[in-house]
Image 1 (cartoon, rainbow, N blue to C red):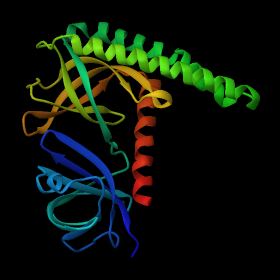
Image 2 (image 1 turned 60 degrees about the horizontal axis):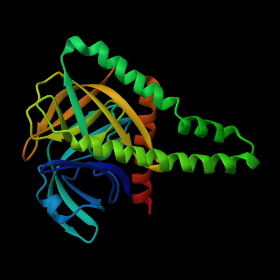
Image 3 (image 1 turned 180 degrees about the vertical axis):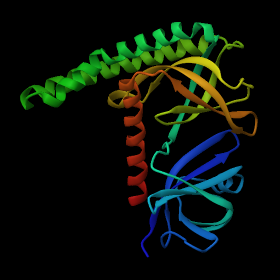
Image 4 (image 1 turned 90 degrees about the horizontal axis):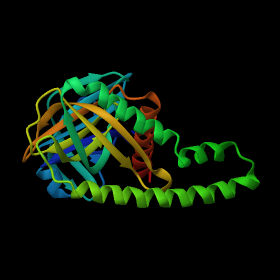
Length: 272
C-alpha cells in the first residue's frame, strides 16, 4: 500500500513545530501502531516531547491522533496511538511554522476603535507600497519591460529589508513593560498567530502588533489587532492563540498565501 501524507505537530518545551510526514504503508486502519517517515526532528525533540499529534485526510474528514514515541531506525519512526482519535471537516485551519520575536502592545477595550484604525492604515499603506504596485505590474507587463520592473523590484526589496532591520533594532531597544513586550511566535494561520510567553496573559485581552514576514521577494508586512486566549501550558509559561480582530480581507489573503506557500514547501520536501 502506498505511503500516505500526514501532518505532525510536536510540542517540545517552549516550542511547537508543524511538519508533513508520510504514513509508511498507508493509513493504519486498525493497528494501534503508526510508522512515520520523519525528517527534521532530533531524537531529543521526539523523546522529550510534551505532546505529539498526527492528522491525515480520509473519508472526507481529518482524523487527529495523539502519539507516544516507541523507537526509530534511520528515518522511520514508530509510535503508538494513545487515547481516542477525533475528527474535523475541511474547515480546519492549517497552521505552519512561524518562528520570530514579535512585540505586543496591550490596550483597554475602550481604545479598540483607535487600534482598529491604526492597523487598517498600516495595512493600507502596505498595499499601496511601491513593492506591491511593481508586483502587480510585472504580471501584466510585456516581456521587454518585465526585466526592468524586476530590477526595480529587487532594489526596492533590498531597501525594504534595510528599513525592516532598522525598525527591528529600534523595537529591541524599547524596554519591555507590563503592557508592551516581546513574545516568541511559533506558528501562524489565516485565523491567528500562536506564540509562547512566560507571562500570564488574561483571557480575551486585546493587543496590537506589527510584523514583517519573509525577506526580499517573499516579504510582506501586516498590522493586526489581536484577541488573546491561552492555548496550553508550556515548559516555562504558556502557548497562546492571538486571533485577528477585524482584519482587512486583502491583508488576511496575504497571510493565507504565505501559509499555503509554506505548506507546498513542506509537501515538496516529503516528496523528495
